[in-house]
Length: 153
Length: 445
Image (cartoon, rainbow over all chains, first blue to last red):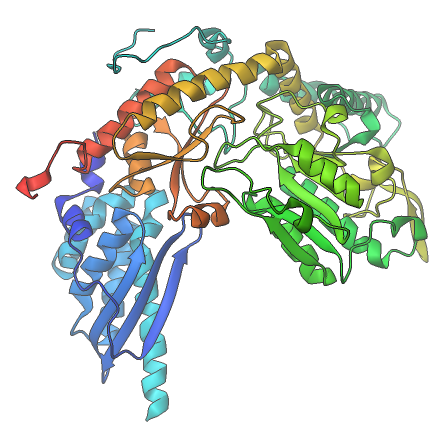
């Protein structure tokens, strides 16, 4: 059975016990992203302190991959600058496009922490979008949050 | 084939109406394996069906022997291609109990429905008075149901937005049926058209069309029946149906992709302006303006999908040889068996009618504690192809308060072993995700 390569224990742990779940105040931007082919949804708020991501709060519904991905992302981006966080998101995208290439995963292991466990998902094209949904939402929400805070200055 | 899975006591297997092993031998793709050598258990015919060799051979025959553009040219190939194309039209007409000139070839059900929806709004601005009879505009109403596939919902939403008409709909009951308690108010003298599915692609429900059509007749409304999930699976005779339009797709009834059908009552088709315009649908063309051919040519602009049409006729022949009544009985037996087996698993909930009364073979279900995508992934790992998601019927999953479902659909090559594999696969998913009945995961309570 190849399922274990996708459903790593780390992923199932994040799915069952998500980190940072729930919508919280304060926030500068809130976005709602859906995966139209399957109906997965996430509502995400971003709170910035300067250009540092002070909080990412979210509610959502979807498969284990989409829900575990947002939980692992939460751990990775809190306390980072928006630029750093989106850079990490680019690397996660690279991992998701690696089609299971172990060499790619190895180079990204330190930076992606728990999110490296999603390497197995990259072998299943239909599920890659599940893992990426939360990162797309973060990109969108942080861009809006930055424009809000910039606009206020 | 030996059964290797255990079955709860009381489960029964009556002989299936169709010879599954013989039929499987007709489908080349069923000979392949998936996911490291596993037998392909294809339970996604509701999305698209597999094709028997006779359909593939018919397309190849056309290209290798008579390929030319039908209804154009005077050379021998053009004559033979035209004859083959029109013979296919006659085959589809006979399959439905309709005269040839009521059969319009389209790309699929979606295009057939859009054709009608655009014809109704084009009617409002047609320069020809005879094309304005069914014009839809402000104050008019279009009626759909909450169980429609997006293909039988969005074209009507869009028609209403273009014309100022109002979209109304019949709701659903908790057990997956149409709620007809307000039929007489929803369908009223303002209703111009009622669009309703014959078989739900997600719930499996077979709708009681007689009463709906009778009410539409009382108020003078047209009726379009979405047969995408019924025509492949049950005998549909348009003379008994009593509707004005019936649409379906070739690829869901063992035929090729890229070909669908719009059947329409001739006098209604004849009063509609075209949807797509261009070559071969014209009578006289002048720079100042043009006139159009009668149906069905009026609605077949451009060189048609000839090989696919020939393939679709071969599919209809294949189904006719099996007998549509037996196809329906076959699926009904399997559906009853699958409903019984699936509903015996703690944590499994069927979304839709729980038994085979007025029900087709689409079985949607949820598994407590496991998202449908994850159920589908475990099944896929076992070689079982099902559909997961909202099945292009988002309002339905919303109505039943679930984000998505896992859906198994059956067809002529489906056997008890396929259903057993599905049931065992669902149990495997429960074990894998630690939600199997009686199992407490990781020592937690």
